[in-house]
Image 1 (cartoon, one colour):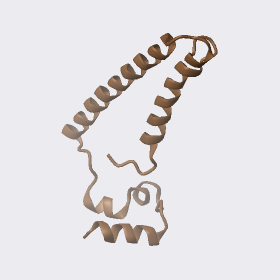
Image 2: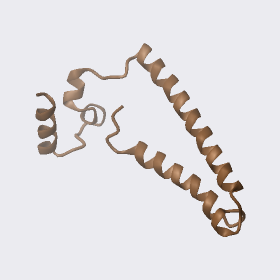
Image 3: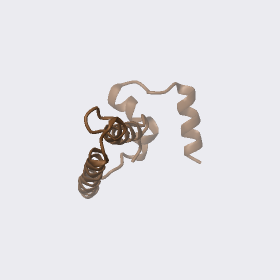
Length: 106
C-alpha cells in the first residue's frame, strides 16, 4: 500500500513507543519510578495484542477489498494523480510530478 504522508510510520511507531514508555515512566508502578516490571509487562502484552488484532483485521479488510472492488485505481487515474481527480488540484508542484511520472513510466 502506498503511504505518501507516512501515516503508518508516524502513528504506528509513536503509538508503540508511547504505549511501552508507560511501563517505564508511569508515576505509580513504572519501572523507573520505583515499580517493578509488572506495568511494563502489562504494556507489552497490550501492545502485542493490539498489533495482532490490527494485522488480522487489516488483512481481512484488504483481502475483502481485493476480491470486490480491487486495490488499485486505473493506470490513467494513477498518471493523472488522485489529488487532481478527487480535489481538483495536484498535491505537488508540477516539476515534481513530471519528474516522478517520467521516472515511473520507464
